[in-house]
Amino acid sequence: MRAVLCAAPGELALIDATPPALQPGWVRVGIRHIGICGTDYHIFEGSHPFLEYPRIMGHELSGVVLDANGSTTLAAGDPVVINPYLPCYHCPACLEGKTNCCETLKVIGVHADGGMAEKITMPEANLYPAEGISLRDAAMVEFLSIGAHAVRRTELRPGARVLVVGGGPIGLGVAFFARIAGGEVTLLDAAPDKVESARALGFAAAGLDDLEGDDFKARKGTGFDAVFDSTGSIKAMNQSLFHVRSGGAYTLVGVIKGDLVWPDQEIHRRELTIRGSRNATKADFEHVMASIRSGLVPTDKLATHATTLERVPLDLPVWTHQRTGLIKAIITV
Image 1 (cartoon, rainbow, N blue to C red):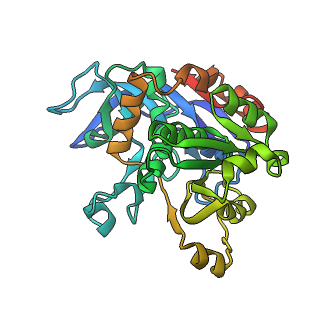
Image 2: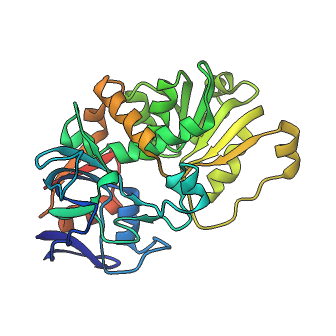
């Protein structure tokens, strides 16, 4: 089968790979679409801290069942969304239903070879019927689920004033599901193109130069009820906390290797609730699919770039260094 291999930082090639073998409880899927994630760009750049090369990337996936391997819930030809997280199901987090933060969690495309290929095998439990949505849109469910999960963990109330810091795909996912939850959403980003993209998607948006403006100050008031940081920038993550009102919530969606430092008196004075949010669960995937079916997520506007498996070694390096106007690039197999 054809697959795209990142042999080392900066080295991509279309290869002929051996199709993965089936094992009991696993299903063979023909990949149809792949979303290129920020993680994939970091792997190509060599800046991912937890990766061993060579690696077949790809974890934002949709496909069609090729061999159900005795499944009682799936049949050959079924379109599916693929959950790329492989939990142990035995640790305390898994036993509480928090498989998204399993103690030994593996993510395909990162800790194991992924789906930037023609075929993949996955546990039956990781395959969700893609009913009522296109296979292209099905490849966007995973990244949107990360935002949906962060919003669900934060327990937003209708009418809550929400600030999303970071206007990349994950930040936009947070913004959409905060709006779906009834929040009044403002998005903040340092990049002018991301600010314009957010405004085009119907969000109030601000750049760094707008922070002292009357419009932003009016929306902020004494602070936002909930602030989500999806930047993956230590500087932004340390500063975003100061936008939260007393008694409010601060949720960290982006992740980066390093230390966050906050003044203790600010956390105590405001009695803030600080959360980390990692990955997503089946409930979040289902919420995203239902929202797409209901027309609440404008997927046509999110899928800004397209390529094929053959062209990935040519296109992905370009997009790694030039992402102006890029929200989500989708590979068609």
